[in-house]
Each structure stands twice: as C-alpha cells, then as structure tokens.
Image: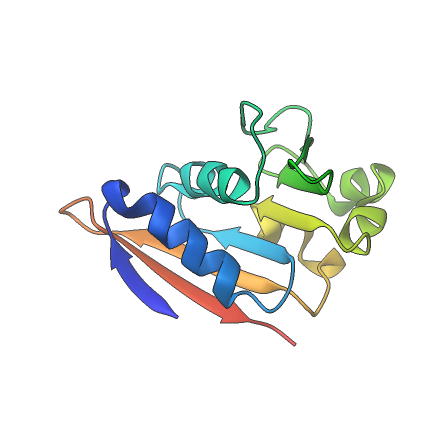
Length: 138
C-alpha cells in the first residue's frame, strides 16, 4: 500500500494501516518530525484506546488498554544506545504477546525485530503532504 495524505486525513489513513496490516507488529520508519507519533496516536485511538497517548521517548514503552481490554504497546527507541537496553526491558515478551506493538525507530533494534512485522514508512514533501508506504514482512 502506498498512499499520499494530508493531516486532515489521518483517521482514514490509520484505519487503512490497521486493515492492511497482516501482523500486529508495526515498525515506523521516517525522519524526525515526519509524523510517526501523530499517526501512531491515531492508530491507537482507532484500536479503541481512550487514554491520552504520548511518545514514550524516556520510558521506552507505553502500555494502553483498549475498550475491550486488549493491550497496545507503543515503543520509542530513539534514545537507546544499544540493543541490550531493549533486551533488558523484555522486548521479546512484548513482540510475542500477540498484542499490537507500534515501534518508532526500529532501526535501533534491527537484530531483535521479528520477521513477521509490517514496515510503515512515512516521508514528507515540500507541500507538507505525507506519503505512507506499508510493507508486510514474512
């Protein structure tokens, strides 16, 4: 899936990402400020979470519960120094929990990523239009 969108279409884009994802582990790629966290906030909302969603830049992971009691995990690995930090927090348990895992800066833990995941790449052009590319990994 490749789609161009503006911020006013973010709810529709989030629904499309969810419906077109074969796996619950979404890996978000894109430059700083491209809108990864903004899209993740909307995805979390579409998954039925009513909490205030913030980027877990310092805590590494935020856990949210949806209306039906399912956990949704939001990771931000921007500030880690090496993959051991992710191992120490038990990243494998999260990845194999069968819950939604939304990962910002997955390149920081590339050796720990499960094969069955979805790459969500966001780019932005000079008109502030975003392009999202979704690739299901097997």
